[in-house]
Figure (cartoon, rainbow, N blue to C red):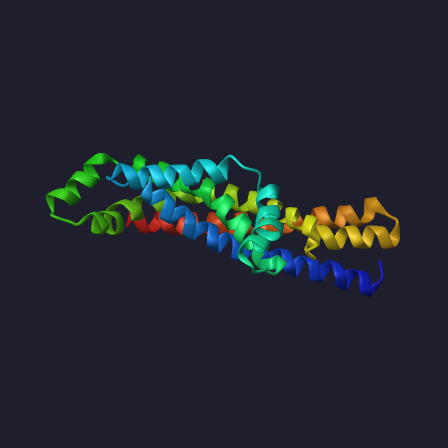
Length: 215
């Protein structure tokens, strides 16, 4: 490939990384807010959080991208740039999956730990912050690592709206070279390298958090 085509691929890679980071941050916030809400003592809070989870988990991420980018703008009179539209759609969708990880990890904490906090007159927020989350978060890391890799692969969906991510750039190079095997092999390798780095970082974070709990 020429240097110009490589530059196109690298620009697409950088766009994919930006989309991944922004979507992951939004998904993390949604995961913890909705996941904690699903363990709330008030049924209306649990119902609202469960409704959100079922809606976003049960709909297609690709269709959600279409909604955010093509359907909502005419209805509200604004237009998001592709990066923010993709971030919003992917963050809200994958956050719904993440909320189930948070809920499951919180429910796996020994009930005696929660009862101990009540005995010490901790407020619900103090029990969550000082007792439940420190024990639950290390258990969330492996499933969050898988979800992060799934989110990385999901970023390719934004190419359908013409956003210049890695998948879109790879397709442009394929059209220019009329060579599918070479360019798609490069694209696969780039996705694999990013996913490999993500899993290594998450595994290191898991070991560090579990060591902190053990101390």
